[in-house]
Length: 429
Image 1 (cartoon, rainbow, N blue to C red):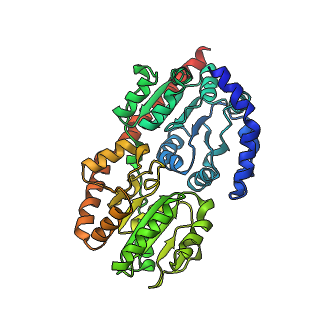
Image 2: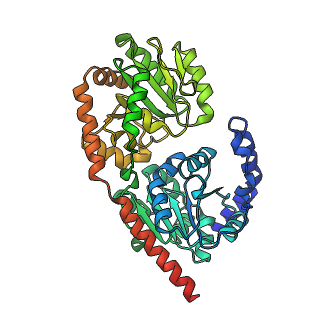
Image 3: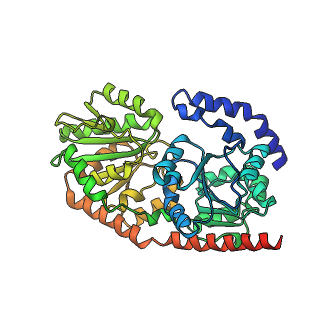
């Protein structure tokens, strides 16, 4: 089965490269360093490195504490972080600078992956969340490189998709050394797909171990003064195409009752910033963009967060946070950065990528789910005029985050175990 998969993905390589070129029209960085995706890496080989793969911004952010711990515990080992997207690469640079080496991850064609391994020669490969690539994992197993699927999550929808390729999925999962899922529901789905029980150790989500800079509260207060201390402010975080129009409709209806209400709109993908700005102006709202470094006047209706790495700051300065990707069927995004600051959270009906977190928060009255725009408008009007209700939900979320910390420590125990096993295997080989 893997042989057929390999032939298919190799045949598709020209199309994958054309797709990079096409995406480069909006985000030129997609056209840069494309040789890395073929396994052609610059510089000298990095034997004995630790290799962590995170797809994009969300996974990089989630892995940041783990990366910092690895840098502190193993300064003698080079640390390589790979991403798939340029925005992920930018986030790696912003968080770690030259303390880590960044490359774009290889396409999952055999010769691309083989070149990558020959250059890196890693002691350990850590894949974040649900990066299950058959040839990547096969190549690691054939070289006796331990593979840890860390902070692993598997939604019911994704599980059904993997079931369509049951043979290849089972073969691939059984080559992973350890799978460390968020919770028992994720663990059971991995087992149902073919993972052996002894491969799966539930650690919880390291996203609960979120670290907030000491200066964050002060910087959020400064930003809020620029927005206006006396006006209601709501944040729409990590929004997607088709969702902004719905949120602007909701905002227009809210402003019929709360004329000075401000929406802070933060699209998920930076290549869409200009298009979303045009959409806002087309809807008749006065707009201020973050990159303009201008305070919002009384007439400003929308503040566009068109920068990278400031979402947590925007959350801390807002009265409440709507989590994007949930009014449209994208699957939602992480609620924890808002909840950790005591900011009340609302999301739409499509949170299937975070189903376990959704149920946890709803069960503890730490978030509210709405079915659509009408319910969202009702909730916004209620929360923006009732500080006690939104404070209650925000405090519930803050306590929930505090109670669920500790996954990072459990994950580090697994990392150290695998590093010792890898070192022992190398001594005996």
